[in-house]
Amino acid sequence: MKKSLTRVAVAMLLGLVAGGCGASRAADSPAVIGRRVQGTDVLAHGAVPYRVSAYELVFAEQPGSAQHARRAALLVDLVGGRGPVRGFAEWGRPGEPPKTYAVGGWAKQRSVRDELVTVFELSLIHLAAADVTRVTRAPDDFAPVAVRVVVNEASGDVTLIRRQ
View 1 (cartoon, rainbow, N blue to C red):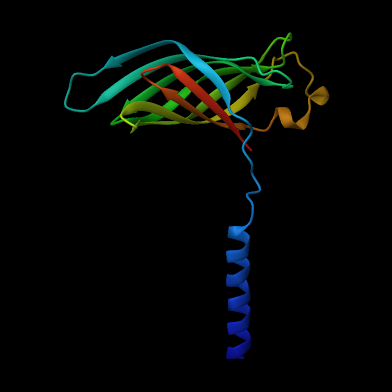
View 2: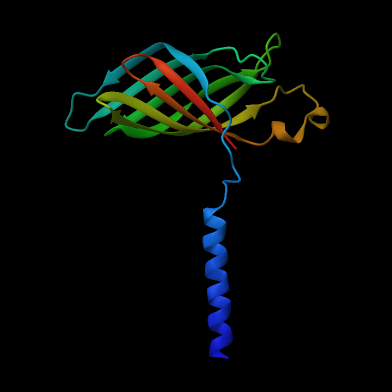
């Protein structure tokens, strides 16, 4: 009995190791490049390092892409370089009105090669107009979209990676 339990445990352990060493099932999409076109910070002058930051981000057209991020407006509360994010994003096809997404998530500031960057881990949820018939919408329209946005605070360069 002990021998068969040991075999089962070893088989399960080998399965976990083999599964962890394989290719990732959730591949990231290609990065979308953008710019911070507006931003402002308001700092608290007390003992706690508290900062409220607002960002307007604009993303470059993606040739050959069916849909891509166009623009985002984010409001961030940073306490000690970390905090919640909220705002909206516009995502769509070239030549069509964009879809609007409510954005929520977390931000973290850190130094990379002596430059301050802000990393946003965000979830986007599509906002539908009240008069849109839900039956005609694709099921993917309801699924949250996960993205990582990295802003170089000195240069204003932005990189967005859609997570799957």
